[in-house]
Image (cartoon, rainbow, N blue to C red; front, side, top):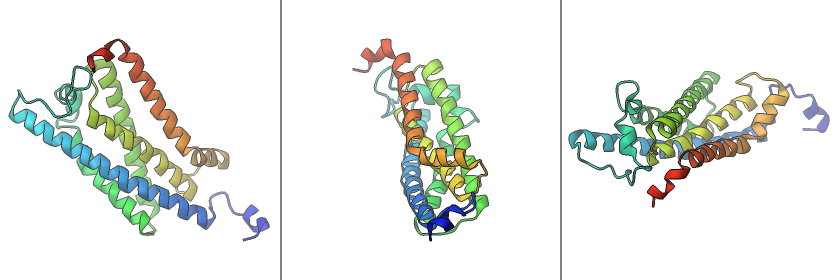
Length: 211
């Protein structure tokens, strides 16, 4: 394709090689991130069952007063919808893995599917943000496996949004769309950094309990 032809591509179109690269990166992220999130969620469900069976049981992810998934699981925030929150991950992450494998296989999934996945990722990102606030500022404990779920949910949302923008599934001004697509890594890093800083500040006077 010549430079002249490229310049006249509609704002909602993307050069084919860029689409392939975007789909491949997203595919690996969804497949691996979804699998990690699914396993972490499943472990939390198992730990919760064992805790219900034996109130004196100490979960494998409870190490000290600061890093303690037991405190999080036994709080009302840990069962916001009347059941253990990780059950949502067990149900949702397999869909993420399936989407990733399909993308890696070169499947052309319909727009409604990608928008649905994006909506789910947005809800997931919103939910983990709420859980972060509750864990850090109200429960006062950090759940290791929960943090793993947070870690994979953030890039899944950011990169899925970037892919939908690059494919034209989500309409947005060209500058905004390009800025988000090209800054996916930076957005994810800044998001991580903000969470890390907030955790460090909030637990600053309690880190001695970790060691």
